[in-house]
Length: 431
Image (cartoon, rainbow, N blue to C red):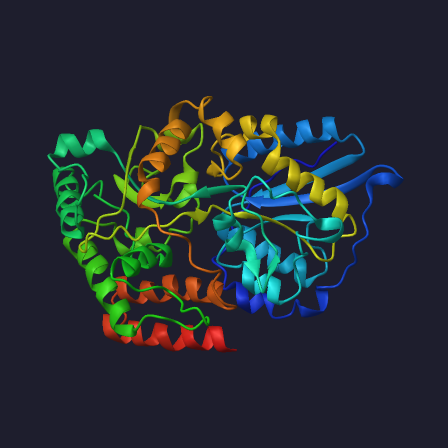
């Protein structure tokens, strides 16, 4: 009987720090043939209970079709997942199949943690996945992560509350000033009980979109930081201005935001809008949020959207796995099997396999259908994804949020915080 997924809540992680001890754990061989009898593999991922429910159903189907392979599973929220994963790898107990993030794939690959999915026992069929997405999991010519889906950044809002407060709904060409004005109306109309927007200043992902709107990127092709302290300061001046005016969530609420639904101000009905990824809209999203939300692209002051087609996540196989062939069968099934695709739906984003995407699109209802339609609408405006970020990028992401706490709690000036962040970020990718 499979061990069922159990969510965990842990503190925010600077992944690079824990990964520093994993270099010796990158061994393993290409063994793992399933021809010698029943085998058991482990599959860990991040997500919410809604995603877990459909993932378990898909794995049940996999086990029916591959009766000599048993799959043990576990999941957690994003930050908790990577803390647990780094600890597992450091202790030599990595799962056979693991969900990998675009921001961390190069770091894990460079440390010898991930198997090459393009050759040997761990080879997976990628013929149905576009090269644009596969490039996101390719490091030094080898494939270490396969995106089962693609997603993109999204703004979601409680349209009923916005209409009631007189806030102008997002429209083509809306600006950051438009966002602040609308959010302020929501906050003011509720007497501050519900803020117009969840503070976005500490999330590097949303800073990246804003940077791209300015024609800049997080990292250059050679893996160096491609923005300046002045850019960080400008971003934080804008977002902290929303907090100070009351348009965005207060510091004590913002500081609890950790990627979990339990600490999401929108889910808690303490904010009417926020930024995220369209892969987050699963079958029970409206039930969890307690109301329906509408989706819109990011605001922009330059006419450039800045969003891109991002591997929603990736499936990777541990280099230390003794069951690589069985692990590859599971990854292949989750990406390419039509029946699995119909079960998983949009739980991880829009399917990367074209045939699966076509099959899934006609079956969707509710929040997944809304997410799928949004992706279809905004798709022509999306830019190609940048190359996987360098080693230390995970630490930089965590540092960005940690230092922003100094801003919102007014422990330091914005410029001092920006300088502090840049110093720590440079150190993280060069050590």
